Length: 405
Image 1: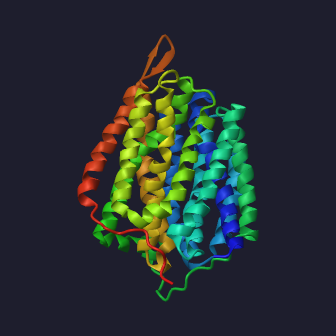
Image 2: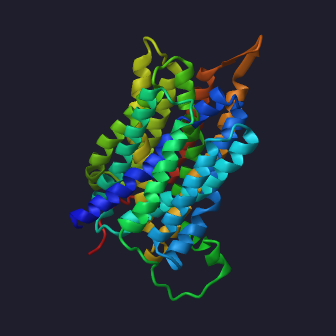
Image 3: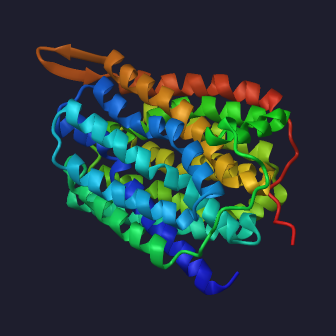
């Protein structure tokens, strides 16, 4: 692959994950601390990510697969994302924030599948060439997290302004730097099932892939407990610059991403996924027993486990899905796995995590005290329940392989 193309795809991933990383880690801190939303309200706002993942990827993936070039679809979505995020900076009530975040997520989150698909379609060997490109997104996530933590802006609107600006840049990048990626030719007649993006469901006839999708869906429920409230938890227990501290997870992800091509050559998909789930269990335990004093090392270790936790689960899943999908369904297949993980699984996790925060909160004399220990142990219990059937039922020796020449 030409180095100029690698650079352009790397720039795409860099700004793509600024758009996401600027607000995703700290939004519930802002909602609960500054706007004084309840845990249930904050969880509902966070669930807009999952609702968008349920409703939009199939349709947009189909549009990019069948009718319009991927980069042009992306440009329109980023422009709308920038406008909507501007309005979020001015919203102060649940009735205002929720619909604006839902509309933003409906525009932005289809681009997660589209950038992955565009990147994988334009490289010869996704298992070797895609991880370094995706690494640029991790680096940008680190930089924006460090900036927000350094400025102490976790509970302000600054993250939303950064998101709006990066969305404008991505709209420009999509139209000027990205390779033209037209829809794949198809000889099949139009059908309602195609219009709804249901073509990708044919992949679920493979028992191993079906098990993988269902286990990914279930595992994303406790995973969302971390994504929704880890920053709020660390801030509440006294960790200074919590957003910056959490970027250690992306530092670990950089190291892990560089190691992924070697891991793919020697470890099959099943073992990678199982190791990823074990890492999630360890993270929750460390968060449950850690503290901002003598137990701060537990927080550091829990955050550093993000490298294996994320890459062994999400990036491996994206590559496995791309490998299993027929060429004409790759965008739609990425939509399928996004639907299962960021959609169904994280929607349930967002709603349950918000309810769990309120359930483990006691108010005495107007002062709310949260039982974070029990909150994190509930995540441990759920992940253990998920791990056992995955160990028995996810039967595949598949490995991430280079594309055929």
